[in-house]
Length: 361
Ligand code: PHE
Image (cartoon, rainbow, N blue to C red; front, side, top):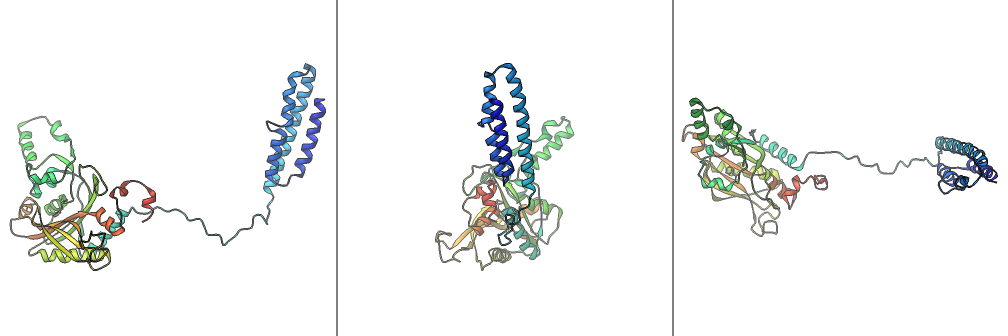
């Protein structure tokens, strides 16, 4: 009985496989004839109810048939897969290609490159300085001694100093420590790019004009306009008779080139220990040009950053004689410029790692 059923299944399978036209059809037949719910597997389940002799005989037959059907199915699959069907394979050459994804520079890097290009074209040099800085170059030399209240304007990430802890104390070391302490030996993450002013002046003589773009750190809570890690770029121009007029001209040129439209500069009195006089400076609104709109909250002006004439104490700290040179300096945020240029509302997007943001640039 069972033997006949198996023979019948075999015949049906042979015919069906023979007639199959596609790989999908063959896969269907595989399920139909050998799958878990197939008649064939049903028969194998009935084997437990028959006599031992019959069980042996039928079992052997079932195995042979299973191998036969499976071999046939596999062969048919192979044959069908290798037949090339020209009609089905026709290629539509007018279908638009899938765009390959390419990486590109981060928007902040692009902005920094742009800034560097503009200043290089105006004869500026690009200077660089360390992000892990000592207290002297970040604060003291910039006319911000230890107890100066202006230090509170820039909440600082202090780093643990190895040198002082590791030293075996000798008299000479003590003297050394004293001078290091005076020079501000404690180390920190720089709170502004103004440290490069000092580093550059220590090794160069005026006249010169530089910008110093770079990453800086402030130990403060973040919101849509503040981050603990961001970028500034410093400008420093020093010579015999550099004056505020030179500053206004360079700033006006730079911003007009950067925003690709005529930009006016306005300066307001302010205070920084390292400049005297100091100012905050604004540019005419990049959206309305000064008439007043929502971008400038109807003021017609946008705040950009701090600037001023280099304080003579800073020149002295860097090793220049007092009152020999004059210069201007400024420092402002690269993120802020990028946000103005591209109308980005949240500074945190830059370092979010969100590709949906990055890909737009
Ligand atoms: N270093 C100042 C700051 O980070 C900016 C500044 C630089 C102001 C140079 C004046 C001159 O706030």
